[in-house]
Length: 149
Image 1: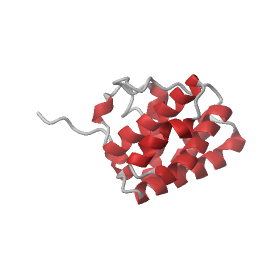
Image 2: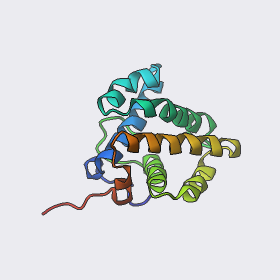
Image 3: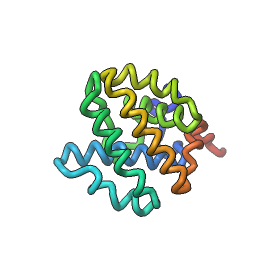
């Protein structure tokens, strides 16, 4: 998680940027009173990731509904990764690395106990569908790209 806090968004790998955009877009849609899947469908479709959208929406909705505190996400165009985003990206990274236990441990700190398993299942399904769509989600393990000088 600390790897990501206050880092520039453009230092994330493509998969990380997509997930960050999707999370921010989901939150923005909710704030605007728009249906999140409808708001995100063009972006997911353009990346051949539309099959992941229902599970992504489910995971985000449960994180929103069952959170022990309100999860804050930056505006879509914000150039820095804020704290809650860093936590969520860290959970996607843990999934990409096959560390479901670590992801679940983090979830246990964020949401009601009864929501941990359903959110973990939804996030695991999203990860599998994004990988099937050709995303290099495993790139989140080294998501911060070294700057070339």
